[in-house]
Image (spheres, rainbow, N blue to C red):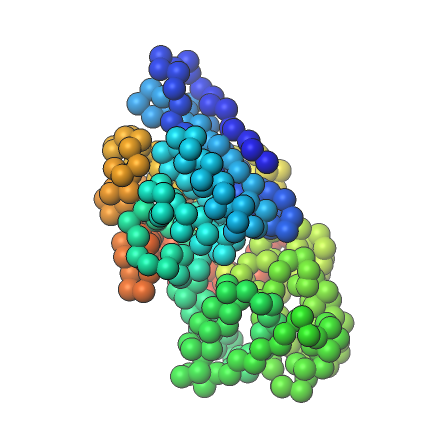
Length: 370
């Protein structure tokens, strides 16, 4: 899908737009709901920039490319967008896809502001070309591990699929829990049916099962199997990667999808800017905006501020990351280089552990915040 988002707003004296590339998963096997929310945030912010006069009188234009969760497709899109003269590339939700995009952007000398992917090693080597809004996986998942311990869970099982993202998440959990008396056992969903996985949970005596798997398959069948197994009535299901955030989860699982804690990157209370943007996003999406939609809006807010202050030159944009100071929907955004992170990083976006309220599955409960 190649979708230019047309500029809106006043008539511009200079007809040449400032172009931004946007990488978004809009078709399967990508997480389409996440892609739709990410694009809604990007699109809304672009329209607001243009309604306010654009970038020094030039309209901002978004060139959208569907990654469909494919690293190869994302890398090819960065090549194409670079050839089309974009000032920067933004977006992406899937970590392995964002990693491919970041590598290509670094190689081509194109600034890349990653909206939503969390893999710590977004690039193999430190780079000046890449910045990121989402908190690194190690940061968010350690907070989730602390939540598990605080809730009395030290015997943890993880249902996994082969992926650097899931493997890294498992390692973060194990490294954080082991010194605190916790154990983590891995259950390979490629080798176990949902019913066999339930048997393994009983055998291991795990009190919590974390879904480190794709959505809707195999996450939804696993939830149904565990919820339907009387032996596991007291077993907590968790989803640190955020599968229950989107309306599709509730539509597929109903009450079975409630009470499953996950990570999301929102403050406990939005400020006036966040409230206003949230209202606009709700109208645009026809449903409550996820944290991913706010990440999209914040991405364009950062890039618009950089473009206004440093122009559309790619090198100038990359050099500006450490000087960014932007009021985002979820708080003030600045970039730094935390230890072990090779890109310019907002350290950190607010982190919550939340779940859908079993008494009212459309309502979220904040269980833990950092």
